[in-house]
Length: 567
Image (cartoon, rainbow, N blue to C red):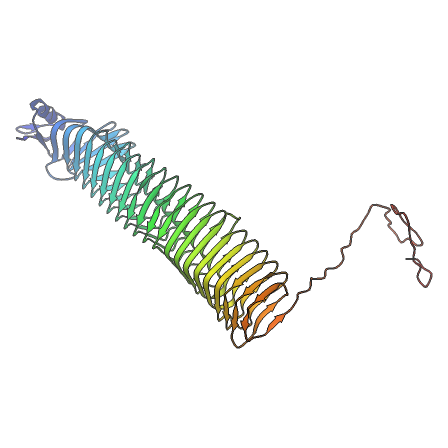
């Protein structure tokens, strides 16, 4: 049976004047105790032992327990607190040292300290309560946080460390100077929460943490909304992020699974994977990213499946020796390039749809830079569907480019391999190779180009087999300068323009056409003679007549003009 004790500073029959005296009486009896506290302000430090419940008689907020410095409540045993306001400074305001502690409808204010400290091997429940300024620290403990409000923490609002296991549900966290929730070498589940205005990542997982985030809303964050680092694992599901610097960041060996989440108006990147970070991203959406929607860099290696990218600047960028696999991706309405692979990076794109972007795919870098694109559509682009420069290499399989400038282009020392691809309704041309590039095409179809179907320039090499060029307004295939190559089993169809205009360096093997073939050898450009001024000899500062000069010569010949003057 529970023993009851009543506390009131006004006194009365069977009344204790302060909470400490009631606790002492309860401890002496050694029974479960209920201590009911009348409204008022109590300047006390409470040490609670055994099975004790502290409750405000007139409800939440009517009882204030305050200390100028030091701890306010230390719990040993099975302790519950209902409706109290606990205020402390420069210490752990509330500490669960052994056993269990439950706080409901309470408020903790910590000035320059920890609001609540759950020590190793303890269990703490925090429900329907408010935490101001200080953080809640779970160290090697277990915890449950439900329907709580954390405001303006001086560092982290909730810290889960040293093997702790904590669930945070349906809570609001705002204005933390550092993180909203930090999980380090521990496990945490965050569900149905709203986080806003944090100085660093709203949710941080580090040092091999296990973090699960479900159904949360995160906004107005100065850094990442969610960050996984240092080999952390876990998942993010059904979460909405708005106005963060980076929607989600993954680095230093972390490998989360992110599903059905939305990242909107992130100031830099929506999804950011770097420094050997990995991650699998499924059915996500990135809208209006300020810089790059999906960014893999510095050794990052994400897998992105079934995602939509809209508005913003760049769609997907893989740079600085990073990797990435991207499947079932929709990209639309960007101001920059949809897909970018640079600087020793490698990317695989499958079932990609790009619409209304200035450029489709852009690659640039040394020979270690490569992209494979399979079953993709680039539609309504301003410049090119595919552009390959530097020494980069791209392979296209089953790719369609429709309504744009140039379909496929490769230049400088790049290499482009085209298999079973289609270019339709372009204003400039179907495919072009320039510089010292190499273009290899098998079963390429170009239809409705307003200029050329195929073009080679400079010293490029074009090897085109089993391809068809139809209704190209100017010419089916044209080759200029020192460009070389071959057309094998190709056809040029239509009623206007020329079939082939070539420079004599291209082999035409089994060409089928009813249009004219023009051989036009480009002559080398004549350059003016180089004039070298040699000042190793006499220098004359005035006109000199009748002089013969020679040095380092074995013989000298003088020519005389008809009038007798020498030259």
